[in-house]
Amino acid sequence: MSVIRVLLADDEHLIRAAIATLLGLEPDIEVVAQVARGDEVVAAVAEHRPDVVVLDIEMPGADGLAVAEALPGQGVLILTSFGRPGYLRRALAAGVRGFLPKDSSADELATAIRKVHAGGRYLDPDLAASAMMAGESPLTERERDALALAARGAAVAEIAASLHLSEGTVRNYLSSAIGKLGAGNRITAIKTAQDMGWL
Image (cartoon, rainbow, N blue to C red; front, top):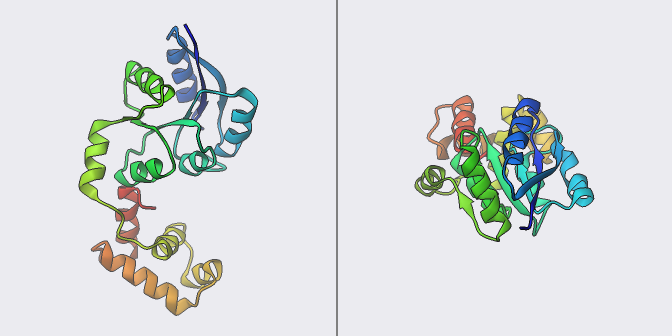
């Protein structure tokens, strides 16, 4: 029986250790490496040559979606507390083949790893249905960038400097994003976009 080599990336030590322990009970799965930061994953993949990389989305250094984009052709499965429809769409666009919430059972995770290793896809059905119903993000790339910087507390002048735009243009992008999201203000627009996984 061939063994599926897995790399785990999650910044929560207790959760990462528990997942590793549970996967270690599977006769055909071996956790060959664990990392706590997104910016450590690519080097760990080069060193340990896993068959499947299991990534959290929110990690220091680099988020799981950015890491997935940096691993073309690699079997990647996202395991996250943030099961937002927009995240699933972005993950699929990045080439991710598996997407599960962290409240999945150990058996389901093992099944998903086997399916990803075999070249298939494994998506949480509830999340896939939500993503289909939610549709695509209505935001343009510039609107998203402006809103993302606003979400970090940046003022219009800072956003303008960061994006190399005029302050008036930034205000227009923010106003357009607020309108498209049906929000009454920037705070509500940010929350809506975050809840949908569009930021």
